[in-house]
Length: 316
Image (cartoon, rainbow, N blue to C red; front, side, top):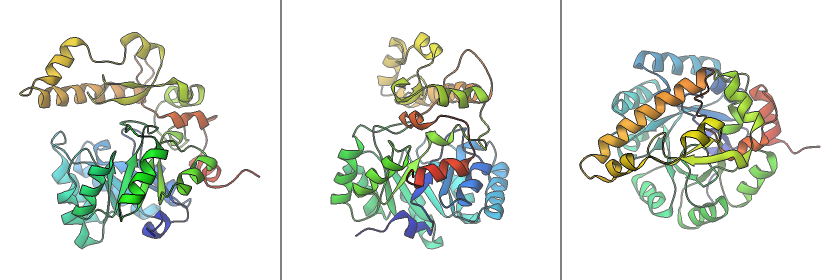
């Protein structure tokens, strides 16, 4: 039987506070580590290597538990090499790879004892990263926030558990204790949970973004290709309804052009990320807030300690 996440990372509860672009920060990861779970932060949340290094050092000095970093490992991330070098040099506990081959990350991290977990959405890629030496796969299902997969948790988790020999960590569809237990019963070694932590006191996003997570629910989450060119879950605010969720015909034509699609995707990604950044930290009618269906479980802005307690303990 594959190890549970609690054994892999020596934590009390099998929960990763998922890395969230623009949302995750040092205070959140410190609170995660001090409350029996673990947290990861996207390296892209830091503009410079100096800021990234300072963040890692601060988390290490103040957190009782392990923490990780999410790396985008495809060519759209020109900072990948320097980010990986910093992670290896400073010795983070684990790396979560997304959107590309983890081969180089695994090769450099294995000798240092740094675990590598890889985002996957299907069996083919899960088996590929297992062959490369990944320590676990993160099964991104169709209930995940951000870039979701196509399969339900009930389809994806048993499929990977049956056909892979490394632990399967589920991402998507967990926002309360009952949902956590259900995923573990399907065979998952642990879960990666993000959206319920957006409306935390330690989060530094705008009060409007947090309140949106309180006010809206799972039925208000829609897929948009306008942010990064790849389908991404966002809250269906009046502004999102106004601009629509699909690229216009010209953007779609360019995205299909073999010569241009790489550059179009990169430009779309940069523009979309700037829009998200503006929405996340300021009040504007042009709001595009990224979140997943698990905001259904968010009913107030609370400290991470309380969110964790409710997630891992059955209601009395």
